Length: 214
Length: 236
Image (cartoon, chains in turn blue, purple):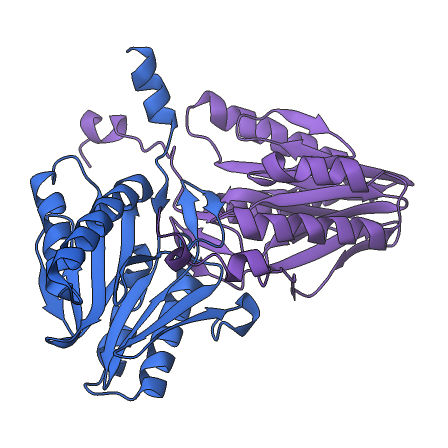
C-alpha cells in the first residue's frame, strides 16, 4: 500500500451533505437550502451558500462532492454566459440543464454530483430540472435533494399542492428544509431562500433562531 | 441437542457503533466536579433521538457519562449499579468510592479490548468522596486517566483550547458551567453530530445534582453570513 492510498483513505472529501429544494408556485418559483458543508463529521462551513448563480434568472442547487459540483457549475456558468451574449436574450432554463447533463453523463464514473437546476425563462415560465447521479434530466414541479431530503419525502408528498400562492410555497419550503435539518446530521445552520419571478430575484436569510423546527 | 461446533465457533465482534452519543466535557471546580453532555443519540448521520438524558447517577456521590455506542453505555450503567449492591454483602457500611467505579470500568474495558470485542465507549466518571474531587477518563481500550478536566470525541479537538484559556481548577461552579456551555456552542457549530440542547450535572460534598436539559444560544446573524450570497461572486 503506497502513501497516496494511505492518505486518501484518511481524508474524507468535502461534500455538501445537505438539504436542497425548489418548488414552482403560481407566478414563479422558490428555492431553499441549508447552510452546512461537512467534511466527514466536521462542519467545514456553517454558513455556506448552496444556491449558485448561473444566469440572471437561472440558479442551481448542488449536492454531492463540493469540489465536483463547484467546478461543473463554473463551466456551465461560462457556457451559458457566452450563449446568452450571442443569443441577445434570456437563455432557456432547459439549456442550462442540458449543459449540466452533458458533464454529469459523460463523466458519470468519476463524478459524485447531483444538481437541481431551477429558473424562469420567457418561453416556458418557471421550470425545475432534477439531474440525479447518472446524468438523467427530469422536469418536475417540485424537487428535493441531498442527504436531508430522505427525511422529508413524506412531508413533501403530503403537503405539496399545484398552483400554490407565494406565501404557501414559501411556508412549504421553509418547513420542509427545517424538518430535514432537524433530523439530518449533515444538514444544519441557517436557511437561505430565493424567490425567482419574471420581474425580480429576492433572497431571504432565515436566522437559526427563526427556523421553525429545532 | 446435538452439539454443532460450527455454530459455537461463530461469534459476533462489534467494532462499529450503531446508535451513538456525542462529546462529553467535564471540569473540576472549587468544591466539586461538573459534567456536560448533549441530549442527542445519532443513528449514523441521522439525529434519531433528540431528548435522551445521558447522565447516570451510579451512587450517591458518583455520576457516569459516556460517548459512543449507547447500548454499551446502558449496559455499563447496569454493571456499575451492581457494584454498590454487591458491596452490601460485606455488611461493613463501606460503599465504593468514585475511584472504585473508575477502576472497575477500566478493568472491564481492558478485558473487552483483549477479546477484540470492545465496549465502544469513551467513559467519564465524576465524583466527590472524603472531601476530595474525582474525575476519571476510561477509553475504548481501557486506558485509565485521572485529571482535572476531561473531554471525549470532537470536544478533544475543539474545546481544550477554550478550557485552557478560560478555566482553572479553583473557579466557581457557575464559571465552570459557563465554560462548558461555551464549549458546546462551538461543538454545535462545528460537529455534525452535535445538538444544541445540553444537560449539566455536578457532584459536590452534598452528593450528585442533575440539572434539567437547556438549550445553548449560538449566533448566526453575522452580516458576513447574510451577505455571502453567491450572486455577487460572478467570477467564482
